[in-house]
Every structure is written in C-alpha cells, then in structure tokens.
Length: 100
Image (cartoon, rainbow, N blue to C red; front, side):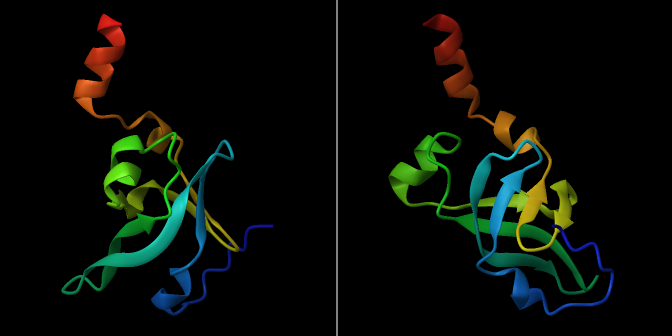
C-alpha cells in the first residue's frame, strides 16, 4: 500500500527505494536526489540499477538517469512515476526502428 501521508520526511529516505511506472514496470532504484537548494525542493531522482529493457544504452555504459520529480505520482514503500518514462527513447533508436 502506498503511504500518501503529507507529513515531512527526510529526503534521504528516498535513497534506495525502487521506482516503478504506474503500470507496474520496474524503472530503477533511487541512488541520489537532484535538488534546487534556493527553492528548497527536490527537482529530480537520480536512478541507478536501471531496467535494461527501458534504458539499454545507459545500462551498457553504467550511466544512470535523472527522472524529473514532476513525474512522481506517489511515494511510499516504492516510488511510482508516470508511464511516460516507459516511452522515453533516444531519437536515433526510434529512427532505427522505423527503418528496420
């Protein structure tokens, strides 16, 4: 069950949580946070341990990705993000699929 409690939490409590899309697809694991210090807000989640089917290039090169925090739908035992993360692709990859 997702905890929708609005009480303040330590931002470090997000680190290590698994991230899933709304449709239940594993996206990755929170490794770090992107912050706007002046605005005192989280602006993104830096993910590692990525789903290789969604992020082929990044998993091959050992890179992570940053998911904009505005995509986050819920935070509880896991983090739920919009399904749009499943549709994020490299434009070159899309072109190759159209040609193939």
